[in-house]
Amino acid sequence: MKCILAKPRGFCAGVERAILTVEKSIKKFGKPVYVKHEIVHNRFVIDSLRKIGTVFTEDLSDVPEGSVVVFSAHGVSKDVYDKAKKLHLKVIDATCPIVESVHKSAIQYANLGYSIVLIGHQRHAEIDGTLGQLPPGRMHLVSSVEDIQKLPADEKNIAYLTQTTLSTEETAAIISALKEKYPNIQGSKTGNVCYATTNRQSAVRSICQKIDLLLIVGSQNSSNSNRLKELGEEQGVKSILIDSVEDLNKDIFIGVNTVGISSGASAPEHLVLGIIDWLKEHLNLEEVIEEQTTEEKTKFPLPAELN
Ligand code: SF4
Image 1 (cartoon, rainbow, N blue to C red):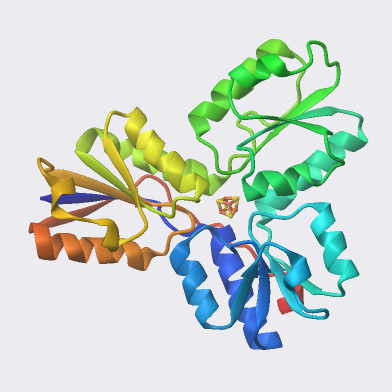
Image 2 (image 1 turned 180 degrees about the vertical axis):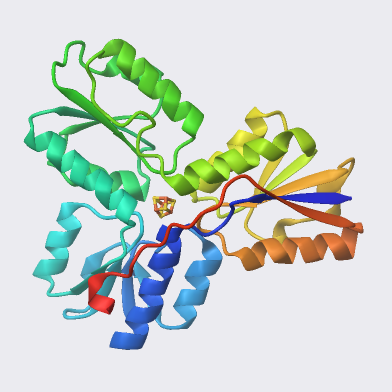
């Protein structure tokens, strides 16, 4: 059997920064350090940070007054900031700078009096954070082309923003439908889908013609990992989202000559390497080829409190 590894895969700059932020916070301020929401959506990352003294919580009321709290890479609403202030918490904000720029755009459009359409998935942490930059009901959330029918018919000043981890193709279709309904709508051509999401999707797309099975390493609640799995399926390839080697069994590989592997932006590389070792041991994997579609050099500096 042969294996093709899609590249880029795995950690993006926002995830690297968020994990390092928690580790450095523990070093600087001592444990425990509290984190609002999962710092990134990956079970293994969460477990390893728990072991070194991180406490994850959804509710800041659980955090003792004066403690250090890190906000996750997905960003938080203004209410969460206000609550942290009221509780006298020391906030270290690990919101990805790309998500932060979406927040700023939402506020700018609102200040200019625009109606705002936010393209994204309901109840995802990033969407809750972006919606929460403005008073409730100020943004229209749409998740599909069909949702656009429910928007008001005539909006003169209207703009759109998107979640950063969406399918590039689906986002393009929604933007195009929005432009049809509102020819003057403002927004970036490809939305706010980030470089890492775009690159991982392109890398998977490029290997799909050569593989019989696609394994995406990532947790079930990871948006960008789910989009990679869906992309494989759209290309006609059997695609499975797995957390780690523990989810594998030999039956999955019946009739498979070439397996493709990629990983979501929150999945550590050691999980991919574990799968390759398993394939070598159990299925006589003979060849591993890495296919790189683009080089990534993006790095984000740590939050100022840690410098
Ligand atoms: S996936 Fe994109 S937006 Fe999300 S943390 Fe990574 S770089 Fe930032």
